Image 1 (spheres, rainbow, N blue to C red):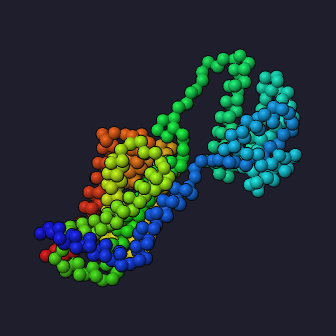
Image 2 (image 1 turned 135 degrees about the horizontal axis):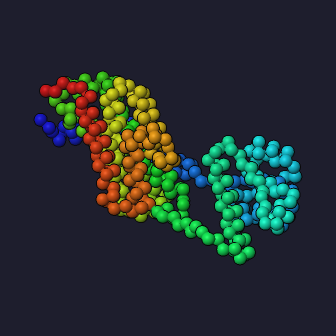
Image 3 (image 1 turned 90 degrees about the vertical axis):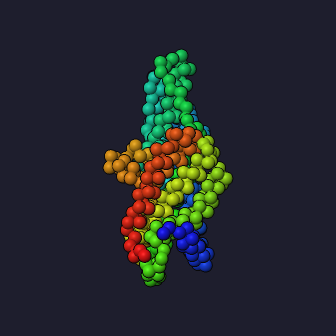
Length: 371
């Protein structure tokens, strides 16, 4: 017969054991905190303060003006070296002294007066993403100057673009990384903690007390699940506080919806860890297996670093099999788009389905002699 008292006894036992074990206590609460801070502060996807070299054969007013326009902002580019020969430039690029270089030909200004002039941009391509961003930055600045020159000459362009960014108006990449980091940490931390809840009793042999006791499978698993969930709620509160007050990511949507969806995802992550605890027979295997099965998918297949739409078909299919993908989408819709509840329902129902499936598998796979 179902007993709430037996469930709570399992919860009390796990909380007491955690509080008595200082190493586990520090690990459970310090690791998620450190991950949030390290990823939030350390993972920078924006390309800024790129050191440039200049090889100016023209030595004209126009070439100096182009360099000035590219570096005037001070945020994206700065001139680190002026070179006098191609050999010096090649050496600087080879040793990484500069990441890009501007090469102006001898007749640069003369060709400009005739109507068209070109200069060369050399970019270190060992990091393709950075190289592409540098090229786009330079093209954007040069295109803007071309528009200004055309207007001064009285040339009206038939089509112009007036971009306006929605949701993340300042294009602050740090905001996106910080919000995504919350999803990654919540996918890892609760799963790792709950993955050790049953397997540690298998290693110590105390699981046999459970096998012969009066507690039912459902009661035992529910107690373990609640233990991991309660501990993870504390971590969730700390992580959300860091996001709101330390990283100061502006929340445009409902705080209630944010907390509700985060609690639901925490329950899914806890149930997944518990499933691995049922499956593995040693703490080392459970820990390593959980880390591999949570870290890699959560970073690569959820839109954390790159948009899912830019991946191949196989990656797109895999991403939809990962709960973190749906929580990541919920976070961005709530945080940046202030999406209404009706828009979030499909992803919330998907998380509920994941939880039901995972807990059902726990119940089916956990073997115990019922009385």
